[in-house]
Image (cartoon, rainbow, N blue to C red; front, side, top):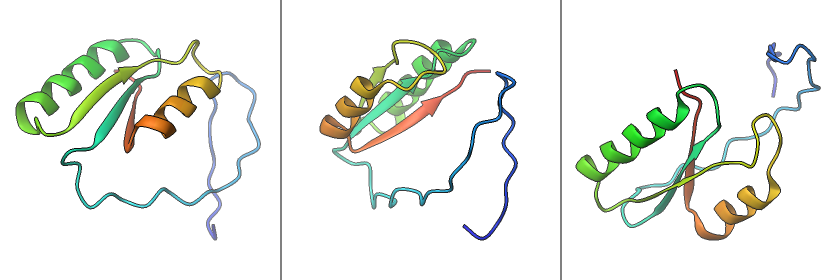
Length: 96
């Protein structure tokens, strides 16, 4: 990446950031498995539930599944492996 970005970490310990390319965009979500990741922030469960309802009402051909990490702020390799194995895309929800 040619730009420098500043990341503020609410834990107070700034991590070392390495830029990565985004995943390629899917042409369509039709018939795809979409994981809605509840990141365990305040009210994120409410947001994820509403997002799942929106997909059911507006894009019923998209299969949504809600998933949560074991704990907040900690990488969950088991959750990531499940999304990689069974999902086509994921949305991370952080709440309000």
